[in-house]
Image (cartoon, rainbow, N blue to C red; front, side):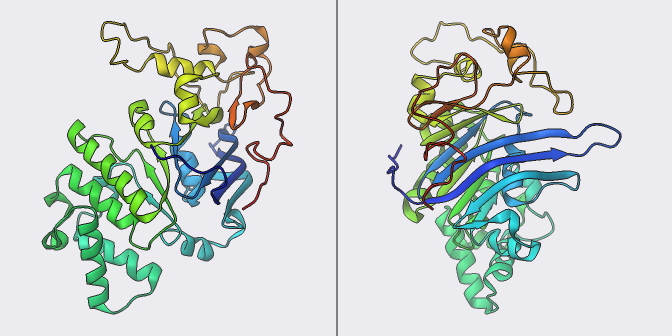
Length: 346
């Protein structure tokens, strides 16, 4: 893991972002509520939590690619001094791929089966860089494929002719087609075997160092978080459970949900220790419990947890947790410059 300078420029700042899904005849499903984080230049921010906690919804909200029933109801997505929510669809289309690109979950579903891989990468180059010279486009496609470890001769093959690992590499090449500053990786190693996962993670780390990428890395795998990430945003039920640097999350977690996730992760130094599981399931977003969303599953819940939603407390410098059991630092508040959601230098 590379250390990110505290004064590294902030590329992306998300303030109080909330997203609903409209359900016919029912109350809206509150998929995201007041999400805050910052992504600095060269940083890898891990987004973790169980399925249904809002990770992919957050990524689609950032890209403004929500399904038809999705609505961003409030907040700001500040990218290089521009609020992406104020842009027209055409202006946002220029940001996608050229400034912020996404490696979608499930490469076989994301790639078009009736077009060659090379043609699909070329389409992104032509659409967003307005390059019409055929040789220049072909040269760029070859350059990108070789960058991710795929031979130039494979550019004219179809996705079904690639292995799972090669398809994922092709998706990474496509994401890099327009030299973006930020790459969103939505569970890029899902369904790959362990050896291929390791290769993809090594590739992303190499590209980060070589190209200076900032990465939002969505995953269920805490081992990947420990290896890849500088900071971690733990989500539960569409809200922030905990937000801190990776060392703090693993060595001094404050939120019971983070603690339970870590207890459910195998410890190689204690091979005989029994793993625990968190009873129950994340809440349905259109039938949320009163109070803390984790309270029905929390081993430390008490009366207040079931009636009052906890605010996001500043535990210490750049460490935040939303739990009534957390003792907030008296000098860290929503008015502190480093508090998530409080505007700082951009």
